[in-house]
Length: 338
Image 1 (tube, rainbow, N blue to C red):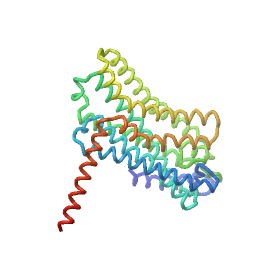
Image 2: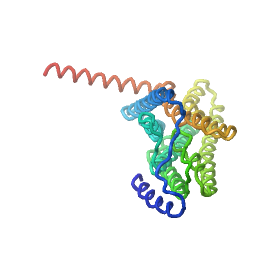
Image 3: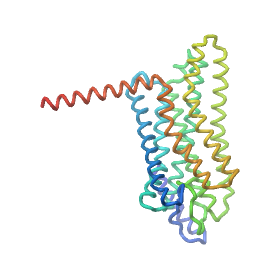
Image 4: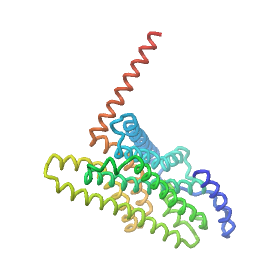
């Protein structure tokens, strides 16, 4: 997919430059979160710490799920994919930002900017799809517990994940290719710490009505559709829980959904808050600051939310570290003997 995108970028970029009378666009300037030089070391340390916590935290979830046979279930299968997605999500933006701060550069190439937007949109949409699929998994587990193993079989789980990837990739490819037909003038400064599609479209000199329409339609169809699916699943779940007579069973059913519901609330509240605040204030800087919440903070908090609230994950992590420590002692013992 990456090779195909690069080839398409080069061919369409050539056509784009021939179509317009403007000079060839080779790079954009990403202004970051602050223009003040004395704040940049603090921002660098802050984002580096958050990035490392995100990567290692989500890696621990993946290792715990893959190493423990008790967690080889649909719920934890989707959770491990969500953790993998969290690593990919932050890796599309933060490393480039850290590199620019370290080298005191604001430059991001035209091809690099389009590629960054492609993968960012891919992982954002995929995140919404995975959250929806996880809500459906909880719905089946609580509302149809006896039929759960039959309904949520490995084939269906793999198919749901595959369809999510395909739909996300096609949406990102469509919007990225449409950006290649836009003409840009002299103002190439992106008031953001990464190439965000809305900010880049605003820099175009040519007509962007089609891009804006597709972007809004995609947000309503994919984002709104996913949210509707989640709300429908939880309406059914709440209705089913209310019908349970045992207080203990009610608590168990609710605790099953609590971690997922926390992540859904965090993701959608922050992302909706960004667009509502940016629409109200019309400030690019406030939008960039708010974007940090769902692009950096949310993926970082995901493993903490699941590990702190989930006893199975805690047990799996203890077993994993216990086995790792035992293997380490064995290796040290063998080295001493030899």
